[in-house]
Image 1 (cartoon, rainbow, N blue to C red):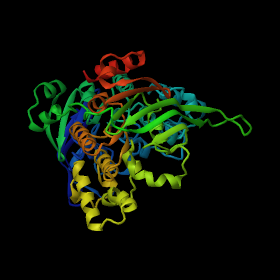
Image 2 (cartoon, rainbow, N blue to C red; image 1 turned 90 degrees about the vertical axis):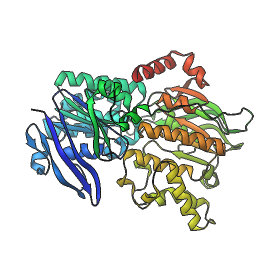
Image 3 (spheres, rainbow, N blue to C red; image 1 turned 90 degrees about the horizontal axis):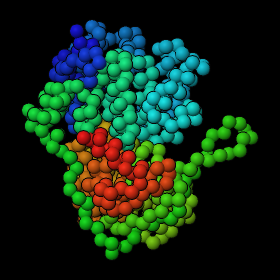
Image 4 (cartoon, rainbow, N blue to C red; image 1 turned 135 degrees about the vertical axis):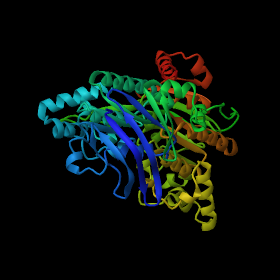
Length: 527
């Protein structure tokens, strides 16, 4: 008997049919990957297993049996000892899944207390052990950290530590490596594989990353529009896919080269000696304050129409640098935008420049207002900076922006929670692009997107750059996309620039050992 059996599962949200007759099995020690584009029903299917969907979800048909016990429609009394103990889940967006008011130690410790009764020194020792397992550096110092004090990749690792705390029979991993750089991706996947072997744990893996699937999965189920199009062993799916949709997914990869850039274009952004420091939390009232350097002595110049790719492991300072350039976090050093020193400008003086300096944040859900429709979110910049434009024209521009990023204008009246993670990222990109800015900081803009949409977004960014001469600071851990989009690459480690140069030079003849290790990890991971 299979450990988990899903039969004829249907999930509706009102008149919308999100999942239609899905069925699959998962055996002990097996890894099954649910693969498909965002909005295909992967996450809805997974959340249904533990009955975690919103109250407006209904189940017209289906059965979900775990170890012979029916979960669909089960009471909280039945589900409570299973959730987090026998079946655990790593959610797609760690920032919204972690409690912003609780420390890392308390959040991981809560699961240990509820299901194992661990508290005090024993619980703390286990939390430290789990943080070490998922690659958090200096885990003891991180026990008192809050989610906002950690990078996106570090938050994801904390989520994985919480899920693994009670050594579950089944781990549901919804995009578990989305926010992680390639070296940590490899570590996390190796960790999951070793835990599977050690505890006989089954893994239901939900991902759009075919590199992850190829490395981890025993079997694959390909989903589209709420239905399973094809199932098979990983070898069979990758070598001889039968369905046209599966063939399209496997063929979709970012291709081509960056838009030609001229060294005669004016310098748009120039940074000199940028440094960002954060105060460490002291142990006592009168303890001398100490600081952590997130970015140190960083300098570069970026011309109009040029893309500078910034790569490095999570926590290397990439995102902090992008925020410092936009004056979203305090820094020292000189920042010049279109020849003007903006480092010392007041927020009031800086505001008119915001129209020409935009950002796409790493976490789309956290950066989109839950109280606004997507039409209001995407059009907000026009409302602020282009008040003289007639409302009908603004609405048309919003529709055009949604279409450019692959969303239907018919969706304009929906709210962020009604979209998948990948769709929310596209909304964030549309919001930044609608103002046609001169400079955009793109912080992992494709990390939440499936492979086919990644390729579309890369083409879109190239097209906009060719038409408007937009300059990009492109922060990413996906080196394939960096290579396809960037004219130059800057490699960061521990807040410093390790190496910088033309993209092909960095990829074909890296000079520094750290760059070589980063590239080797990426190539091995994608092989």
